[in-house]
Length: 346
Ligand SMILES: O=C(O)CCC(=O)C(=O)O
Ligand SMILES: [Fe+2]
Image (cartoon, rainbow, N blue to C red; front, top):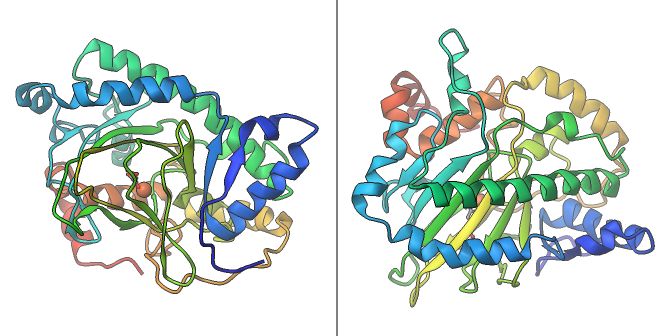
């Protein structure tokens, strides 16, 4: 087994569901989880909806600035809504992308709730037809992702329901537009997804997504029509005690056309505290067969969720949102913004 991958493995959902092929496909999934942290899920059953959503994106991004501003993310302490080009930052560099962030339906923040509960709240939609599309799309992703974590558990020799109790309330969905930009521009900078268990990404046919391997080389994740690119996010990394680590990735901005993408971030429970997690992680980790490949990546970004600096997931996640969207962070969480600005992630 090579320790540094040079391509992204492909997992067939149909084969996972078929008892005749399940074992063989679980071995492919296990390899992807232990060695790569990224995979393509083909035959996922959401192909028609993925195509429909991608067909709608150009028209959705073409709505007027007035309508976009009406649902600006600045209005949302839950970091949901519209973000115009140049207002998002990753690894301290501005990302060349414009986006709408949505969340699955959940109850509103009430007076007396802990302040971090504001991370989960109502979405802002530009119109009813986008709301309908988002709700259908999130429903489909919720089913795929729930089934997928079951297979992920089985692939690493854990009971199928191991991760179910870690799934959070509000998953997030983004519609993203990367405009044509000068060569070498940052679409989104190197990062590990902080806000969930796994991310399920539907790319268009342009390309530009790259994944960091253990030798420090950037490996292309070229588009495969109808597939979902799934990657381990920091929640799953933390729950497995860092054994199944998240993989750093980035997007190089397109130089000759616009690129669109739709990432779905499967929620992890925000109320988990590091100490609860340490206990659950210990029992999970004890049952995971030892990976043959523990090699750390040569170059990497730190994982906020497993940093001892943050007491719990919600704090780590809040910090991540505040840094990604500093204008929203400053407005709603000015004290934390100041405090986190002084502290690099350990
Ligand atoms: O747009 C993409 O292909 C990836 C986006 C991404 O990595 C993210 O939003 O976390
Ligand atoms: Fe990402």
